[in-house]
Image (tube, helix red, strand yellow):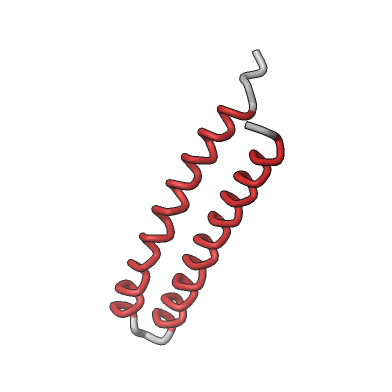
Amino acid sequence: MPRKASSTVICALIGEVRSCVEEAIVVAEAADRLARRGQAEKALRLLMDVEGPTRQVLDLFRTALKVRQTLLPDPQ
């Protein structure tokens, strides 16, 4: 893969990971606020919305590992 293309792919992966993590943080912070106000059950239901972005981050991380294996040969 040409250097420019690999850089574009890596930047896109990082941007997507960051976006998913930020989304999960927003949801977790909202759930935390609900829990602190005594709405623990509602907070827990809201916290379940973190699952989607978390799965996306794991999928993107697996993709990043494959890209790394392709672009960065084993130093042995």
